Length: 415
Image 1: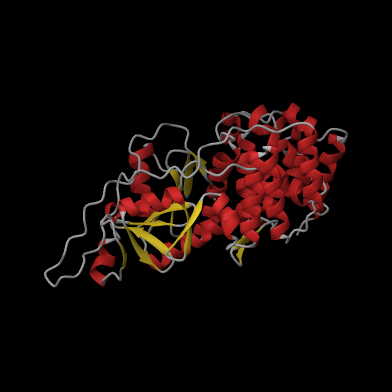
Image 2 (image 1 turned 30 degrees about the vertical axis):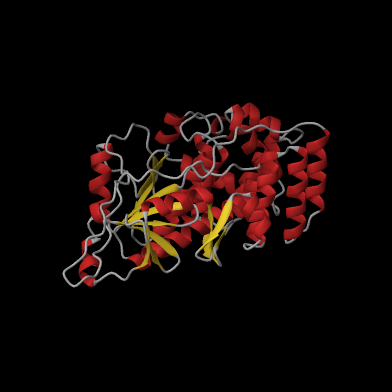
C-alpha cells in the first residue's frame, strides 16, 4: 500500500463549517445535526518550544525516573510534583501524562494538566468551553457537534443516517485528542475514534518519557470517507490527482477511506501526524522523511489489542522485497539511505520497505539493543534535521559497518 504526504498547498481545505441550529420537525422532534463546517478548534495546549534542561537537575530527574516502576502511578505523580518545583515544565507534563495513563481518574494529575470533569468525563478546560459554545450531541461515549448550545441524547432515524452519507453532511465526532469527520455510520465512526485514541496512547507509551513529547496545539483532524469514490473525488479536487490509499498534511490532517486495511492506513498516516504534532519533526525536510515513513511502516504493521497498538510485527510484503534486494546486493547502503533528500526518497521504489526494515531493526533487534540510540537520534532530529552525521553521533562508539551487517543478517533470518 503506497502512502503519500502531500507536498503542495491544498486549495480546497476540508474545514469544519459553522453549524445552523437544529430545526424542529412538525412532530416536535429534532432533525439531524448539520455537519459543522468552520468551527474554530479549541487551543488545547500552546506549543512548548523544545528545550532540554541541562545540568544537575535534569541528571537527577533521569536518575529518579529510572528508579520508578513501570506501573507506579503515584510515583510518577510525585516525580511530576518534583519537576514542578524544579521548573522542569515539559518533564512535569510527561510524568502527569504517564500518571493518568496508569490511573485515568487521578484527579490531581488531571487538574494539573488542565482537565475538568463534566458529565462524568474528564475534558480539558478549553475543550469544555468550546463544546458549550458550539453544542454537542452524545452518541455512546463520543460527542457529535450539533450547534444548538445544548448537550442532548440523540438517536438518528434511518433517513437521517442515509443523509449523513453525503460528505457535506457528514458526522463530526470528538474524542479526547481527535476531531473525526466521516460519512460512515455513527457506530463505525465511534470505532474509528477508539482506534485513533489507541494509536495516540501507544505513541506516548513508546516515546514520551525518552523524548518528552509536547501535546498537540489543537485537536487532531481525521477524515474517513465511506468509500474510495468519495475519497478520490475530494482528493482530486484538492490535489489535482489521486495517489495511494491515504495521506497526511499538517493543515488537513489524515485522509483515508473505509476498506479492508483502513486501520493500517490510520496507523501509518496517524503516526506521521503525531511525529509532526508531538515531536515537531517536519515531514518534508530532508532527510527526516525516512523517519516519518520508516515509523509509518513500523506502526502500520501493528495490531490493535486492548486499546493499544502492539508493535514490532513483521510486514511480510516489505520483508519479502527486502530479502530479495539484500540477497542480490541491490539495497541502498545505510549511509546513502540516511542521506536521501525527499525527492530521491519518494522516487526510489525501495525506500518504503527499507525504511520499515531499518525502523523495525532499530526498535526490535535483540529486545531493543539499539532502541536507546535510535530514540536519541529521533530526539536530536527535532532540532538538528536528522542528518547522517546526527545518526553517527547518536550511535557514538558503535561500529556502523558491523551494525549494517547485523541489520542484513537479522532481516534475512526473519520469518
